[in-house]
Structure formats: C-alpha cells, structure tokens
Length: 124
Image 1 (spheres, one colour):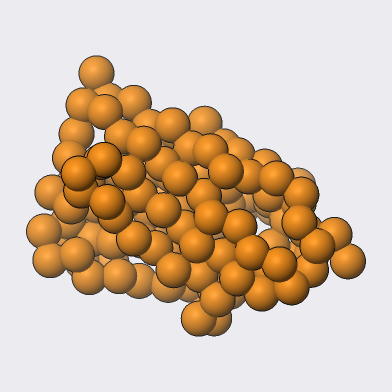
Image 2 (image 1 turned 90 degrees about the horizontal axis):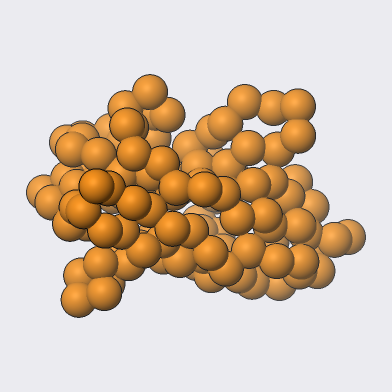
C-alpha cells in the first residue's frame, strides 16, 4: 500500500522560511516522481515543484521563482520542499504526490498517489 505523509507546515512571517517533508512508503522516491502542490482557499490545486522519475530532472512553477527547492533523501525515502522568502500569497495547504512520471511532472492529473496536506500560513 502506498502512503505519503506530508508535514512541516506552520505559521511564518513574510520573508521567513519553512521546510516541508514528505515520507513515502510502498514506493521509492527517485524511481517514482515526487511533486509538491498547493491549494489556496477558492483556488484550484497547482503544482509548485517536482522531480521526475529516473532522471531526477526538476521542474518549478513560476510562482516558486527560485525561492523553493525540492530535494530527496533516498536513504529516508523522504522528499523535502525548502521554501524561502515566503510571501502571504504562498498561504495554502501543501500536498505531496508521487507516481511514475518521466518528464514534466507539475500536472495534478499525472498523479494517483497523494498525501494529506499540511497548512502553510504566511502572515504579513
């Protein structure tokens, strides 16, 4: 059974940093792509950053704009999203997802496996 567990959300002031974690079981990150997505109230879920299957190529949404960094610790089968220079517009529930995806991996429709979200709130 595949399970993804996201954590690390919280309340942070604008300009601050947070690192989200996603622990996977039943699959292997790196072999499987990992994506981070977010959904703000009243908005559609959108891709933020991802690592594709096999080649570990990363894709970042324009909203990340060099502020977010995705990484994988293979030994822990854990993916991270380091978020710096946070803005109030980054406030959302953040989700991790995984599936076998080669190439572009920022589409929500590409993923079958999703973790529960973790709330990130950026205060001004």
